[in-house]
Structures are given as C-alpha cells and as structure tokens.
Image 1 (cartoon, rainbow, N blue to C red):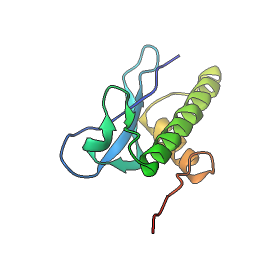
Image 2: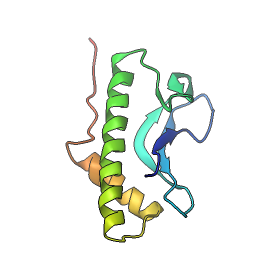
Image 3: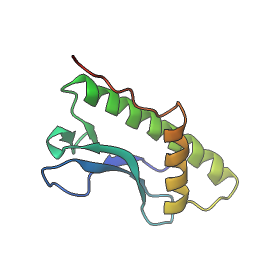
Image 4: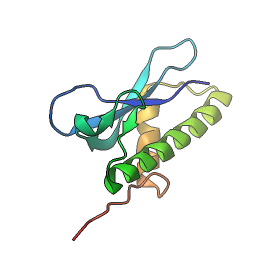
Length: 111
C-alpha cells in the first residue's frame, strides 16, 4: 500500500496550495492540489499537516485526514480493477471528495 502524504512546494511567506502525494508500486510519484491553502508558518513539515494552533487549522487537518482516507479507499478499489493510477486519476479523486460532504471543510468564524 502506498503511503499518502501532504506537502507544500514552496516556503514563500504567503498562502500556498497543499498537495497530496503518494508513490504507487513500480511507478513515479503521483501528486495533486488538494484545493486547500495554508501559510508555511502554520505547516508542520515533519507531521505533514497543519500545526494545531487554532480551530481553523484543526478543521483543515480534519479535511486532509478525510481526503487521505477517501484516496486510500479509492486507490485500493481501483488497483483491484487494474485502473491506471496517475496524476489525472488523483486530480479526479480529489475533486470528487471535495465536492462531496466527505471532505468538505467547516469554516469557523469568530465575532
């Protein structure tokens, strides 16, 4: 089973896209944008998730964990049927997950 992780592709001090990635057996790394963004100062490179310093970041981690589980399930199912796993496949799976209630992020607003 491929290990699924998250990363930022830059360390610039601005909102950056979070990428999901993994390496299927005997293949190159597959990656896609998750549709989520974060400032690098709020990101833990060692944990490959957001630092849990406020409710928004905790909700972001919940969304990333849901996406990871969704991708893992889809990967297991599609490998069983011999479907080619590539960047296009991953982009489609991310889109399906984010459009469903499974991966939707809860936005917390403070007044």
